Structure formats: C-alpha cells, structure tokens
Length: 302
Image 1 (tube, helix red, strand yellow):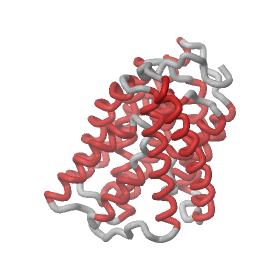
Image 2: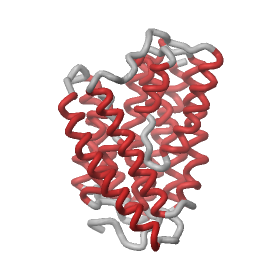
Image 3: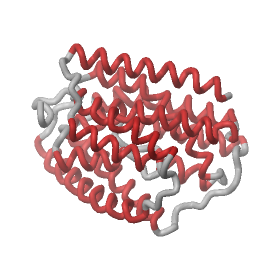
Image 4: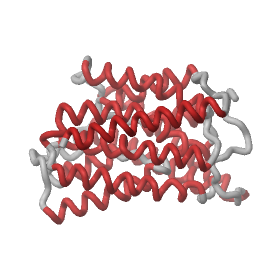
C-alpha cells in the first residue's frame, strides 16, 4: 500500500516542481520573495505539528498585502504543494500502514476530484464573494484553534478504520473539502474533527489529510497557473522555506508545545478575517467583475 501511494507521490512532486520552474522561467520570476521564504518556513513548520498553514498564510498575505485578495486562493495551493508532499511522505512512512487502505484511498481520490472541480469555480466567482468565503474560513480556523487550546476538540477514538456508512460520509466530506480548499478553506481542521468524531485515532488522520492535499496539488497548481497570473516569486518563496521546515518539524521537535503560538495565531487570523470581511462588504457594493485570478494590479513587490 505504501508503494502504491509513495510512487505516485514522488511523480506528483516531480510534475509540480517541473511545472513551477517552467512557469517561473517563462515569466522571469525565478527569484523568490525573501519574505515569502520566511513565511513558508514558519507556517509549514507548525503545519507539520498540526496547527495548519492556510489560515496563517492567508492572514499574513492580507496583513502585508503581499498578494491581492482575488489571488489569495489561487496562490495557497501552489505555494504549499511541495511542503504538503513532504509531510505526506513522512506520515505515510510513520503511520500510513496502520490506516484502512480503502478509507485512505477513497478520501484521497475524492479530495483530488473536489480540488479539480473547485478550481474553475473560483475563476468564475466575483471578488467580493471570494473575500467573504476567505473571511469565514479564517474565522472558522480561529474557532478550531481556540477549541483545540481549550481542550474542546474531539479527542477521537482508537479506530484505524470506519464502518461502511461512516466511510461513505468521510469520503463524501473529503470531496467537499477539496472544492472548498480552492477558496482558501484549509482541510486539516475539519478533516481532523470529522474523523475524530467518527472514532478514528487522531494520529491516523494525518496520513489521510496530508496525502489528500499532496496528491491534489499538481492538478490544482496546473489549473491555477493556466487560469491566471499568480506571483510565482511568492509561490517559490513559500516552497523554499516550507520544505526544509517540514523536515525540521517532523524529525526534531514533534513534541514541542505550541498552545501559546496557537493563541497568537488566533489574534492574527481574526484580525485578517475582520479586514477581509470589511473588504467583501465594501466590494459588494460596486464590484461586479468576475474573479479571473488575473489581477488588475501587480502584487506588492512586482
């Protein structure tokens, strides 16, 4: 089972790397954004420890205006794709053999299909709608962080598999998570909560979550690059910072206490959610143009 996933994972990583370098060369964007390198290192380091990377990355993009609002969802998946693949490989080797293969493969395939279907939906969505979705995504993420810190998240059981009906629900939910991730709604927190509520061992949720995101990244990345103009210097920066950070977190400090950091992240994420919600409400009044993932203005630093 591990070979059946690790081989396509390695091929997916090569495809992603090739597509990223090829697009960067064509657009003369090979030089990474230094701030994005630091951001990628920090967010992916703690993502490997279970905090999540999408919400903090969205918050920083918004706070620093590194990426225009309409391009935030289009940038997240390509930027975190390769670090997610590194996480997936680590979790598969450490824990993947313990997970029911039908559940693992079913969730991964359903998530990938959702990602591919969701990408063009983002491209046809108005800017203020995406801003509103991202604002709610940030608020939801902050809620999950707070529940985790207060010990109110479901503790989960000890199961490595699920009954047939619950397995169908989990697979269907992953399809929905795949669609929503195109709008910047990270899938780690909702997946962890859902599977834990169903009785899964929380540790065994990580191979499912990481592998789903990792194998979906190449298709989403190619679609987002083809649909519009994303700042590849930001994507390359987050990637370069993220990959070594994942290795450091996985092999050096897996037991590091992160409760205080989660509370700090909550403050930043809620602030970004409020700013994004305000932008959405203001934009709704006069913005009628569709989201094309091609900004009218260049990203900061261009």
